[in-house]
Length: 141
View 1 (cartoon, rainbow, N blue to C red):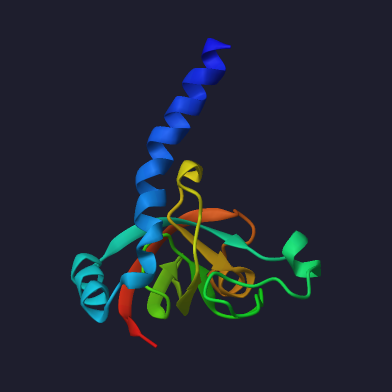
View 2: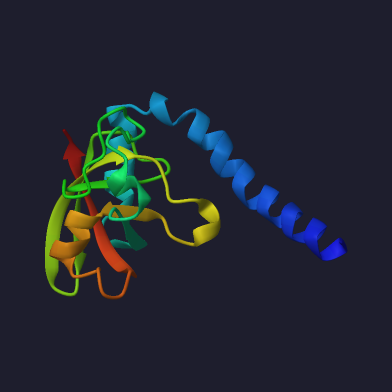
């Protein structure tokens, strides 16, 4: 029982700041995009992909910004970047431009970016499932 309480406490401590920040994520301005852009010169992110699982069969699955989820669009999920932010992702010599339209991944996964299956296919992430991608913020759509 003590072990379960300890695990729950750790989860609460690691997710509470992200949940608090998530509440205000919709208030980001273009100034915040610029701040991320300045900080993003050559940073890397641990990325994974989503699409092709259960959501593939749900015709009315929506992303956090309200649009219909399409696993083949060039889109991504991030916990804090403003919706509509465009990113250039590079992995294993391949690049793709994605647009943030969803929130995630969960803090406890250790990843900071989820890309659509379409973007992951173009990047070559499908076989490994995850990878360190170079991220450049290139603006807002």
